Every structure is written in structure tokens, then in C-alpha cells.
Length: 438
Image (cartoon, rainbow, N blue to C red; front, side):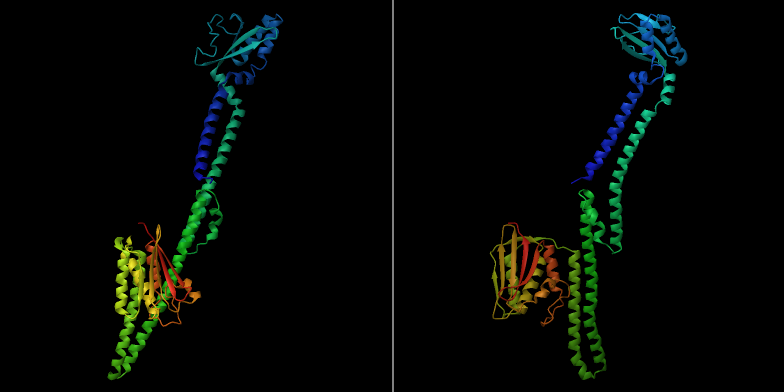
């Protein structure tokens, strides 16, 4: 992964190193003796001219060259031989003590002292000591500093380009994410707008991929809520319409006939109350999660078995549970799940064949299966059974298609998974997989 962290850190240190190095080099470059001696016009031909005149014995003309240098450029020069003896000078202080071993040490802060050692082909060595006023040197440096300034300009351009690339690499993905957030708020989110950004191999790519997943989940949630509202309004309309028709018929019917309508009206009210209660349960499950508690699974299954035997004594329930199975879950949620699945199995299973409950333990998983021997479900409807208000239309059912929706969401809150399928030997089987730690 080309981490953005290392990219920013590298750009920062690169800019810092370039700035520090350039500052150091320019400082040394502007002030080093060799650069001044090689670029200042007063020193360009001085040493060669003086040596040529000196070797030819024309000492007065050599001395005159030094005086000319002083007059034109205010530079005072002293020449020493290998023994440290003063050979020639343009300085008025002929007998001024000079430390030849440390010629760069200035006796006055207003002067800059430069040392230049020259060897002749004959093997003689001369040391030139130049003293130049700092004001004169600064004036010349100001007028002849184009080269160093060009280096500064190049460094500034390079640092600017690096900064721009780094800035664009951060701001452009942020702009795309900002547009995506705006689209998400307007319910017009499109994954393809961040698809290219999600392919990046840095933190922005990971963020864009996660944002795409979040946006898709939010869109699915919003779509499911809209669909749920449409389904709820449709499901509520039917019992309300029947109540209105029943009330209208009851008002017009004679007193003796009215007694026949009241039980039907009460039944419709009861159905409406049941539907509203299931919708409230579904809404509460998305907002509240019961606290976990410790309980024994087999004991809970025996309680549910006894409840079903009380209401449908003709239906047998075969329970196979390797006791004890101690769990630490939200007991009320698991009880609702098992009770709902068990009642569905009892409703559709024939009385001469038992409903089978099987509990299987694995190393880190608990599997509970509830199977009936009923007619099963249409294969095209299996994947939609847990959606709200979806139910088998060719069967005489009294539910509203919310039971399995509530069941699946309860299983998800328990950290498990619900699978619904037709059994290969006939009937219907519901499988619950829950995390289990012994």
C-alpha cells in the first residue's frame, strides 16, 4: 500500500532537507574565498600578471599592479614568499603584523581577508593576502549573485511542485468524498462516482471503498424503509376497510341482525391489533437490544415444547438436545425466535408426523434445526420469506408475513445466522447458527 502517511512524511522531510541543504550551500557559496577569488573581476588576472612581472624582474611594475588594484577596487594586497617575508604590498601598513598561518582571521570587522596561494612552474610558492572592505564585497555580490539566485529559484519551483502534487493528492479525493456525502444526503448516491478513487492503494482508497459500502447499506436501508411504509399502509388498509364496511352494515341492519356483526368486528379489531403489535415489535428490535443473561438451552426448549403440547396436544414434538448447553445471550430474543419457528412448524406439520428439534454443538458454533413435515414453501419464495409481509399465498395462513422478519433480525442481534430451506425428504427446515464458547 502506498500509504498517504509516508507520502506526506517523505514530502515534508524532503522539503526540509532541500531547504536546509540549499541554505547551507548558498551561505558557504557566497562566502567562500575560492568563489570570490575566481569570480571577482579584480582577481581574475592579478596573480598571473604579478608573477609574470616578478619573474621578469620588473618589480616596480608588479608593485604598480597592486596599487592599481587598490585604487580601482579598494583592495589591499600583500605578497609573501615561502619564508614568510613580505615581497610586495599595496597596503599603507607595510610593517603591520600578519598571521600567515591564519590569514582569514580579520583584525577589523569591516574588512574581509582572503588568502590565495600560488605556485610557479619553477617551484616557488607565494601567498597573496587580500583585504577588501565588506561594503565593497557586498556591493559586488549583490550585482553578481544571479547564479545563486537562480539556484534558489529552481529550489523554490521544485518545492512548489512537490507541495502542489501533495496538495492535489489530498484535496481531490476529499472533494470527491464531499460530493459523495452530498449525494448521500440527497438520496441520490451512486457508487460509480467513487469507484476510481476506491482503486487507489492508500488510505483514501480504503476510505472510498468503506464509504461505498456504507452508502450502499444506507441506500438499501432507506429503500427498505420506504418499502416497509408502503407495505404497512397496504396491510393496514385492508382491515380498516373491512371494519368500515362492517360498521356501515351494522348501522343499517336491524337490532337482531346486529348481534351477528359484532363478533366479526371484534375479530377484525383483534387482527388489526395483532398487526400493529408485530410492527411495533419489529421497530423496537432495531432500536433496543436486550441484555445477555445466563441460561440453559435444553431447559428453554423443554418449556417451549410443553407450551406447544398444551395448545396442540395432538402434535408430537421430538427434541434432541445434548444437555446441558449453557449460554450467555439475550434469552428473550432467543425464546422469541424458537417460539416463532416452533409454532410455524406445528401449524404446517401433519399430526401423525412429529416436529423435530435438533441441537448440535461444534467447537465454536451452536446449530439448532427445527423441521416439520408439511408441504414446504415454493422455491421461488424461499429467498423472500424474511422480507416484511411476504407469505405463501396459496396456503391458508393467519399471519401477516412479519414473523420470519422479526425472527431473522432477532437472530442477527444474537450474532447468528438464520437459514430457511425445504428439506430434501419433504417438509420445511429452519437452521439457526449461533456463536458458542464452552
